[in-house]
Length: 138
Image (cartoon, rainbow, N blue to C red):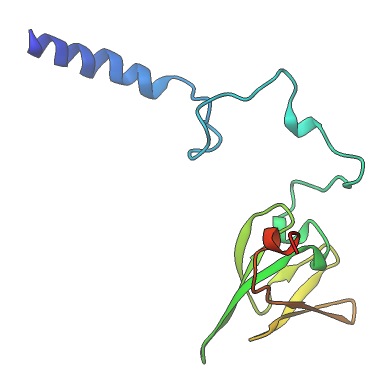
């Protein structure tokens, strides 16, 4: 009896589980509970936020100053900054990487933040030592 059950489970149930469409197919770490209320959330764009080109990389979708520097790592061989975009995505960037929607390029990373040069203008982004959520509470 247990042999039949294990064969049924192996050859029928398991393939069905892996072949069915998952609600969280787009995000492996997303919720399995559907929050769909009938309208697509991606169709809604608030009037106060301008539409951005989603085909571009997140680091070049918005202006330089819309990003937050979370931390920097400096060694004799390499300088790296940890950055959070306006959309909440986090990336590591280095000197020479593109940043901002005006063809900016990271020109320097130091202990206080990064410098981005775009159109002969240098923009400095300081390292934020506390979370953005805590800043609004003060």
